[in-house]
Image 1 (cartoon, rainbow, N blue to C red):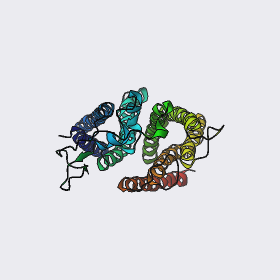
Image 2: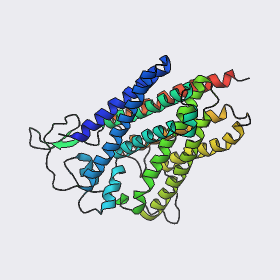
Image 3: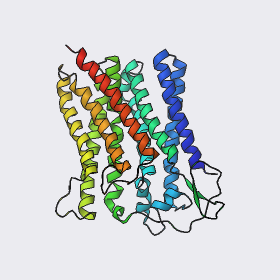
Image 4: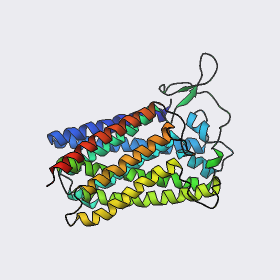
Length: 353
C-alpha cells in the first residue's frame, strides 16, 4: 500500500475542512466549530510533516519505485545530496512550502500578538485566509502527488500511478540522480531558505486581507513580525542563490545575471523592504493605504514568481518548462488573489478622506 499517497490525501482533506470550518466559525461564532477547525488544522499540518519525513526517508534509501525518488535521487549520491533532493523538484518544493505555512500558522496562534487577538474576528479571518492558501497548495500536491509510483501495466511497461494507492510497484534498479547543476553545497541551503521566505509572506497577506475586509487597523500586529522574517529569509535565499550561480552557472565575476526568475524573486524583496519602512510611519497615522497595498502585493508577486517558474512562461535556468494542470491552478489562484485584493484596496482607497 502506498501510505505516502494516502497521507497526502488525508492532509489535503483535513486542510480543506479546516478552512471551511474556520470560515463557518467566522460567520457563526460557534466555539465548537472553532475547536474542530483547530484540530483539523493540526491534523493537516501533522500529515504534511509526516509526508516530508516519509519522502525524505525514501530519498535517502533510494526507493526508486516512487517516480519522484527515481527522478531526483540515486545510490551514487552522497547523503546530503539525497536529502536535498527533497526540494529539487516541483512536488517536493511544494510539499516543503506547505509544511512551512502550517508551522508558521500554528506559531502565529501562540505568538504574543496571536494570544492578544485570539478571540477577535481579525485573527479568525487571518487564519481562514492562510488556510485557504494552504488548501490551494494541498490541491497541487494531490494533483501531482510526490508519492506517485511506477506500476506494472498490461503492456509490460511501467506506468505512473498517481491515484491508485494499491498499485503493484514496478521495481527499478537505479535512480536518475540529481541534475548535475544542482550538485553543489549551496543547493542544500538556497531553496529551503527561499521557501521559508515565500511561506512567511502568507501571514502578512492574510492579516492585511482580513484587515481590509474588517477595516481593522490592528492587522500589522500580526503581519509585521512575519514580514521581517520573510525579508530576512528572502535576502539570505537570494544571496545564497547568487553564490550558487557564481560557482555552477559560469556567470563570470558576477553573482547576478538578471535571469527572469531571479528578477521575479527580487521584486517581492523590494516591496517587502518598502513595507518595513512604511510600517515605521504607519504607527504615526501615515501610509494607511500604502502599507496594506505592499503586504498584499508582496505575496501576489511571490505567487507570480512561482507561476512563471513552473509554467515555462519565461525561459530561465530555474524553470520547469511545462504548462500542466498545476500551472493552470496557480494561474487561477493568482487571478483570484489579484481580483479580490484589487477590489478591497479600491474600497479602501475611495473610502479614505
